[in-house]
Image 1 (cartoon, rainbow, N blue to C red):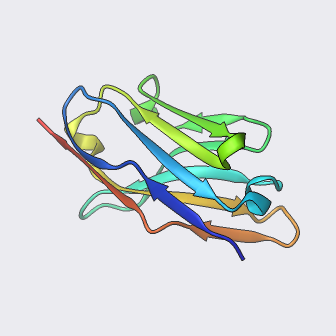
Image 2: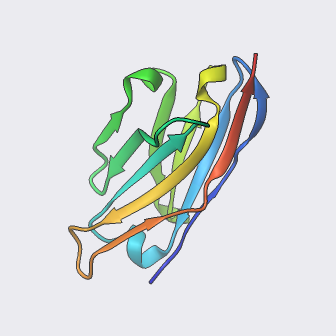
Length: 120
């Protein structure tokens, strides 16, 4: 059916930057879809961080606006999340979702997650 694989997490200090990469199977990546980053901190619900559609429309959670940027790298079939000025409250497991429920055949795939830890 395809794959979604995240990479790029790690441990950084507050104020630092990280870039997360979500690699998606090419067939899925080139279909009608959106790719989104979600995150889940311990004891909290999973929340949407950022989303980008096939035609490059983007949306962000208020908490990351101005600090995070989502983009598509067509050559690498990937969605990138550039995270700047990281804060301790950004600490979470970050998950990538490839949502092609409007495509045919439809798909909705999640990656395994990558840990981001921001120390103060």
